[in-house]
Image (cartoon, rainbow, N blue to C red; front, side, top):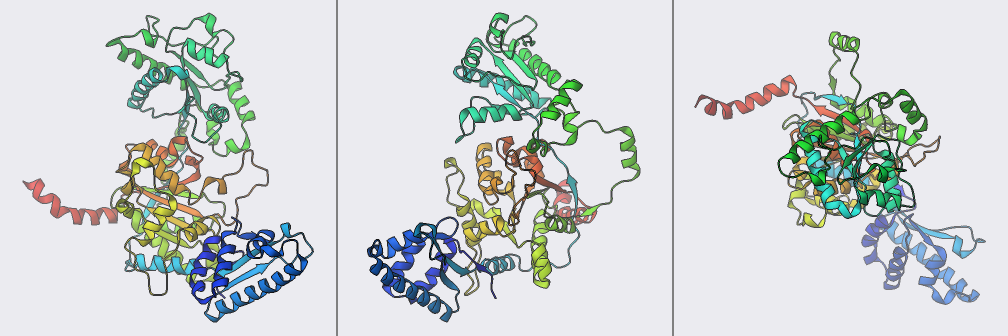
Amino acid sequence: MPPTLDPAPKDSVQQWAKRLLPLLSPISQQRLGQLIDLIADDGRIPYAQAYAALFPDSLGDPAAKTRADKTFNGFRTNLAAIADEHGMLFQLRVDQRKKAAPTERRLWFVTADDSEARIVAYNQAKLHGLPEQLVDQPFAERSEHPRRHYLLLYAQNEQKKALELHQLLADQLLSLDRAWAADDWQQPAPGTVREQEQARMLEQASAVLALLSPALIAELKSSAQPFQSRRPIVPLALRRVTKEQLRNTAFSGLEVFRDQGQSCWDQIRGATRAQWISDAAQHLIQRLERPERADTRLHRLMQQPQWRAQDCDPQHFVDPPMDDRAPEPASHRRQAAADPPEPKTALPFLLDWLRDPAGDCFCAIFGELGMGKTMLCQRLTVELLRLRAKDQGAAAALPLPLYLDLRAIHDMDWDWEQGAPSLDAMLRWLIHAGYQPLEGQPPPEPAQISRLAQRQGGLVIFDGLDEVMNRLTPEQCRRFLRALWEILPPRLWKPPRPAPRNWQRAKGVGRLIMTCRSHFFPHLKAQLSALDGEQREQVAATDYLWLTCPLARPRWSNTSIRCSPMIRPRHNA
């Protein structure tokens, strides 16, 4: 018996109704269309609204209601019979609580679910001809942590001058290998409540960088909530401020950075500005990388909410706040050198990850050009289909995969200056790009793909992020990734804040794999920042399983053989 959707969502009802409508009488077509328009997000139709739309005369007239019931039951019976006659499952069911008030009763459709057949056929067509004998792909598993970041604090009416100073400072820090991210106090995320978002940024920041000025002091003092932070505060003098002005503020008693001549940024001119920035960067590094006092660390640990602790490595509470990790003990390094880890093979590892119900929802696979990222994803897709077809037990334990090659996004007629295309638009384009469906086997619909990932425990693979992002600006890249995340939005798998003690991820939540070339990013921290949205989104670096495909010896040999004819003429010239 084919799988069913009970209740069927609106997209499935519409899909099967298209096949059924030509077989119905005009009045039945009209009634079916009216009912489809009333389907709610949970797939159900309010009983009272359905009767009001189909039989408005039945409202308040018992005799008319009796006639309407008879007509409606005949419509339902006829609908199911015609569908069954043509090999379709399409039923309209009614809540049997006849004594309940009409406003409490519901109707719903039941349809066949052909999404698995569509997705399997699509994968098989796309991956037809994949070689059976392939070199095993080794990999390196990375346990990465969110990049430390600080809160940038300045006065709203001094935004232009403050951001100019901060950009120069950020460039200086980056040149010193401190690629720290910043949350802008004056620019909370769109669609959020300003005060709540500012409180969230302050709570999550590792430190506060305050560009002090009389305007900032006045702005904070006039706020309904006093500005306080348990994180390190590093004040830089944007404009001249006095100790009297700082009294009874969070900056009272703190060392305010000025240059050796005690000049604030607004007083610096010409070539001396570069020295001011250099000294300010060193001051910031020294302050933020200074080890915390033991009592401060203990207090922060005891106050840390459980949902925040889930995103923190245990070492976070004993390391300097802005360090990535503590130095590894020499004894550990000697042991690691004496006992090198056994190389891992990617395909079995990924299968184990997919079998683990507590595994990360997201997986990011990096590697240079030709390191086997695409082949690994294609082999994983084929192997999952094979295992599911071979054994029903495996079908229950392993997800149904869908492999999507993002290169086709280039051919979309889309103005990226207006934002990223919607997820549905991209899915529809990717599915139809270069795909010739078999006769009688339509391709999967975007709603079916979303349902696969969000409710049916499926696996969606987006292969080749760099193929799209290498033509976009950083902001366009963030919008693009944000659209892709909607296939498995954080609200479905992130624990609420605070999380109940017995909270568990819903069973139907699936997995997402994304691949990208390593050289698209200048360094490792840029990889992490790109895929967690510069820590401006709900997706964190710790929500990913991070894999890197290294250059294995067999692959290096094959690459050398292929490239030698191209290299030799230039080398010998």
